Length: 93
Image (cartoon, rainbow, N blue to C red; front, side):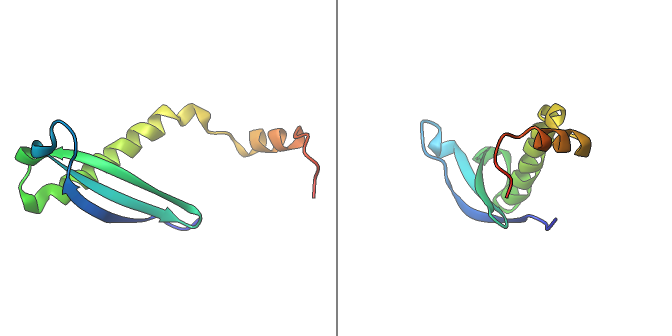
């Protein structure tokens, strides 16, 4: 399995009611046909301009760690996947 390519897609002031106090750092995540963006909002006053991207990367990491923990029970073993595939009603090619 190939690695994800993760890059900063854009950095901009956040829109909305707290726009003056927040910055939005958007990450572009790509791997093959999987492509998506993740916006990370940070308070401007919390970090120096030079540290914003590092702080956003840390927040992105924590977000995916939490997502992995929340979906841990969804993981199927190879045996379970084969069983599901075996009971599929779709025509085989």
